[in-house]
Image (cartoon, rainbow, N blue to C red; front, side, top):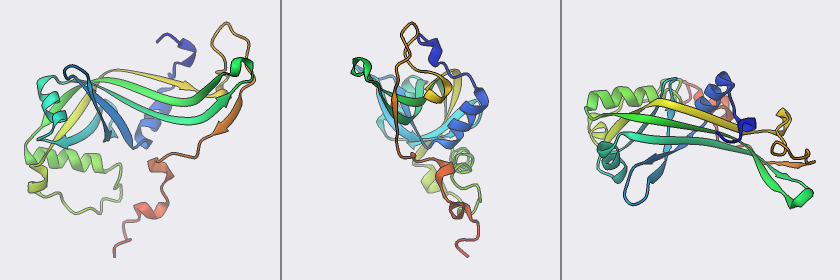
Length: 194
């Protein structure tokens, strides 16, 4: 990482961030350009769980080459500095280089999906996934080979690039994004349908 001052190495905080975020971007090999798509995901420590239609471009690309890169980010605030009319962002960003382990068997897809659903349905009140639905998708366990993280947050003293005077940035926070922790408690009430 070129900007070592932006390196984010607080692994418990990174893990919490990954467990809270909802959408990742997954890039796979394709010709002549990489193919990238937004995916819901679940972080499980050594891997990210995603799924897709077994009949689409993403599935074909994964079958051809199991290496993929996954990126997760969260914009925090707009930064404006009077010197040089500089404008920037506060943000968190994680990039994981992974190897895809693909599951096709319906019973294994169902087990994978149940593990992934725990993030969104910790109350475990969902109806079982039907085999017919499981036969339409592949489950992908993206095992992390390498992960790097960056953050730029003024509260942590990360202002101007090294070697430049500290610019007096003005900070304009964005509205909170969609996160699991941002949902109300009733979203996880196991008795809400009774």
